[in-house]
Length: 184
Image (cartoon, rainbow, N blue to C red; front, top):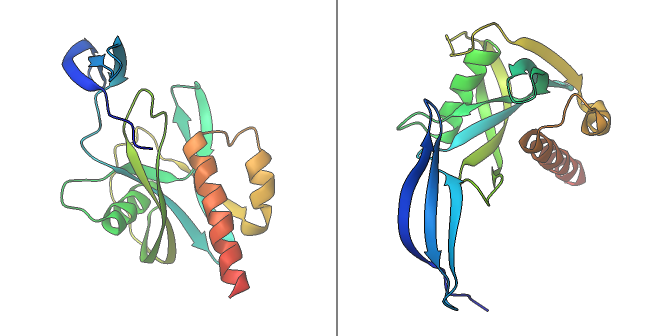
């Protein structure tokens, strides 16, 4: 069954900061109900998250997250620049955050988190076959590289220092991907 989408009557700016814009969206549903929802302004660019595999290790970074006010363990990630492919963006982010480029990328999936309030796609890729290459990024301090054995994926999934939802989805997708390679 396909439902009729609500009619957007008006979109206005409810609040704006240097980085964020909150929109107020007036809707009319097919049954006549009127509601006002709030959301982050939809993203104009997608992002990438990279899961670099070096031999039997997963390469990760620890960086400060102001949302939790602590250093968090996660994967290289960032916004795609205009005109970049997913692989080009992933390669640039790795060079900025890990000082490595990669020759091989495999697309795993695209995710979008917190759909009630935002629309921001993130493409998840696996990277392999590395070469040294450092690009200047926008991080205020060098990120701490962390190697995690692939055999410790289940431990990482349960680790309280590894709790960001997109990172968890990426790790589950990686685990499924690696399992599918073993079946073949």
